[in-house]
Image 1: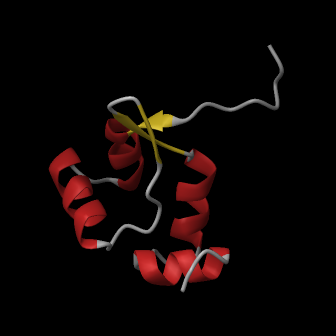
Image 2 (image 1 turned 180 degrees about the vertical axis):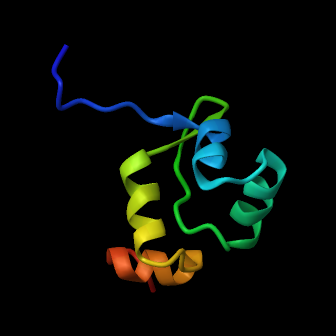
Image 3 (image 1 turned 90 degrees about the vertical axis):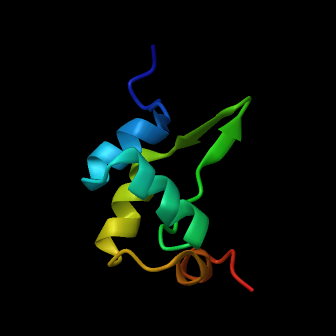
Length: 74
C-alpha cells in the first residue's frame, strides 16, 4: 500500500478530533459554523483529516468564509 495515500475519516472521528460530541458536530454542519462539508459516499459523510486540520489552523471560520478561502466561495 502506498504510504502517501490517506483515508477519509467518519463523522464520529471528525467530531472527536475537534473535541465535539457528534450531535454538536452535526449542528455545526447544519448551521454552517463548521466549514468543511466532507464528501458523501453512499449514506455516509466522510471528512478529509487534512482539511479539518487546515480549517482549525485558519481559526475555524464559518463555511462561507472557509469556502471563499479555499477559492470555492461566491
